[in-house]
Length: 178
Image 1 (cartoon, one colour):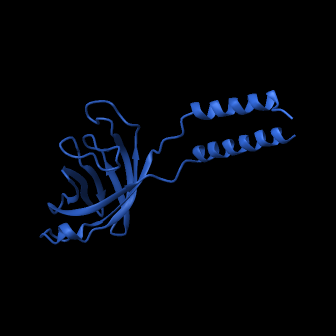
Image 2 (tube, one colour; image 1 turned 90 degrees about the vertical axis):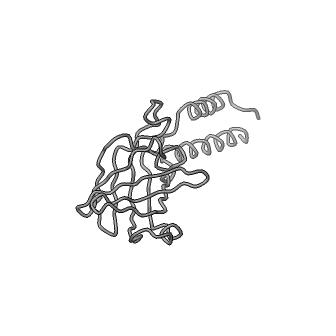
Image 3 (cartoon, helix red, strand yellow; image 1 turned 135 degrees about the vertical axis):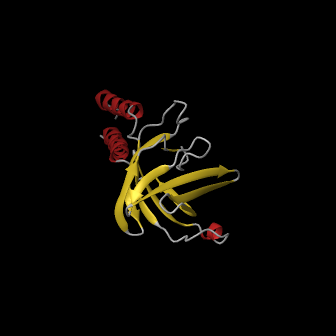
């Protein structure tokens, strides 16, 4: 009633492979935005624009433009129910590691077209608060928004790794009992 060397070697090899293989990093992040009613009450115009979509980003960078943030390379989404949102790459827009638009003074607006107009997300870090604004370049207006960016569900690769660990545990248990 001992542990079989062959089964143990396979289990240890699978465990080492799982520990050495990096799980896939998210390259898309979902976003939603609604008017920030508390800030809108201070006298901003309109404060009626809402929307949602997806940012596609590159891996975290270590160059002076990004300071470890993930560069935004594309976006899709809706604005007030219209699905014609398209990304316009200008400057170095990026997501910071805490899933916010990289703040000033290094931020570049996330510029996009929607409903035949040019818009932008701009983010300001005024300690202790973070403020996001939606700017309409055609009407030269801005409104404060609550911009929420979330990571997608865990990747299938990570779930596969959890399943393999469970299978290894069952194999070791079976070997021990036989």
